[in-house]
Amino acid sequence: MKREQFSSSLGFVLAAAGSAVGIGNLVAFPVMASKNGGAAFLIMYAFFVFFICLPVMLAEMSLGRHTRQNPLGAYTEIGQNRAWRTVGWMSVITPFMIGVFYLVITVWIFGYLGKSVMGQLNELAGPDSFGNFINSNELFVYMAIVVGLTFFILQGGVKQGIEKAARVLMPMLFVMLIALVVYVFTLDNAMLGIKFFLIPEFDKLTGKVLNGALAQAFFSLSLAMGILITYGSYIQKNNNIVHAGKMVAGLSVLVACCSGLLILPAVFSFNPDIQLSTLSESSISMIFTFLPKIFLAMQADIGYFGASFIAGFFFLLVFFAALTSLVSIIEVPVCSLMDQKGVSRRTALFSLGAAMIALAVICALSFGRVDVFSNLLSYGGLNKSFFDLVYDIFYETILPLNGFLLCLFVIYRWKKHNLDAEISQGNATFAGSLLQKYVNFSLGTFIPLILAVIFINTVSTIFFGNNLLF
Ligand code: PHE
Image 1 (cartoon, rainbow, N blue to C red):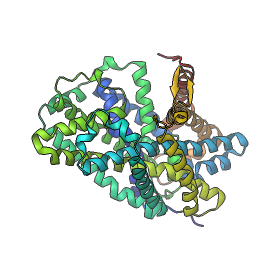
Image 2: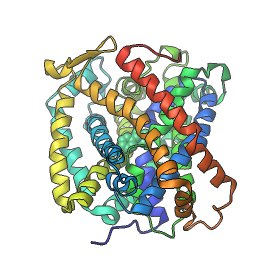
Image 3: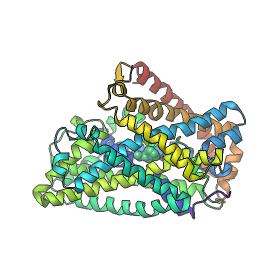
Image 4: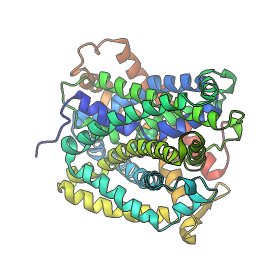
């Protein structure tokens, strides 16, 4: 069967940007930036995106387009041995498991969307609402709808499913984001938030902050999850990979930046004297505990209906971003199963979907509802739930390891000249350019080195409670 393709470079860019733009850009980034030096953080983040993440991105896209395979197939075909095949397996299992916890978070967002629309903003802003919601039966109704929507998109295939969804949802997302930024700019004290975000404080950039910024950039561009290898395998040969990669990276930074301009003015208009250092570190508490309070407070100006409308609008925006990311991550195991076993898309979706739902339900029950799942293990001096375990192993630990192995694979196994030849198709100026030299050099030296250091430090910190670096 002929492999499906995106209809154009723009189709790929929108789908890949759909994958990249997610909860990370919209919520995690503004929270991190506001606590860690504002524009100074933004500058470092953008630097990491273009100088460290972009080469990895180009490598993944080229590997996919060259082999026309899912990650397992690509590692097997070029690796030609068992060790690389194992790495291929890791590149398929990792997105599957990250997909499980991302599904749970997407369901929470969808639930908050549903509740805002149904006039329950009051309740959402209450002190225990988040804890109650994630342990409610209602959650499973929302989960069924999110799973249904994701399946519906993926069932359509590359062009009629993934690309079409991105073509509809991404422009809507951009327009909604801009509309919300314009709205929060009109609020009292918005200027304080904008100033806070745009004035750089370079002394806040400690080693720990830089490590966080890099990890955030890496996650946010969907690297080392096999996504860009898989989407890369659907790119046409005459499309310009470098150009597409720069567009995706640029859009992701732009959305992160706009999101800072949305969240910080809202926070400051709510409380102009707020001490950001007292805000919780986690983006989860920002989005599910703090923001509903801010939206509810807007009722003083625009009434309860208006406040609910803004809340619903915001959660819809985040939901679109999360949905396109979820689609991209589930496509990796789906495509792998189709390629490797020759099954239909529908069969792949149903079998993987069933396994994924079972695991997501276990995750959802691990916030206190079922004790074995909630207190599954203890390591690094902390009690961990099933959800924590999935997050720690696959997101925190294996992601940098996969990135490290990918760099070595592309440069030392597949070889530089093959990478260059693939990128050069559709890009006449790449060969001999400064970019080519930089990509070759960085992927073979300091990028894998940095990823290896992050990996070792993460293992030591999470599993042994001993941070080696800071
Ligand atoms: N880029 C996404 C984000 O910022 C991360 C992600 C992509 C997560 C794909 C899961 C799947 O939230």
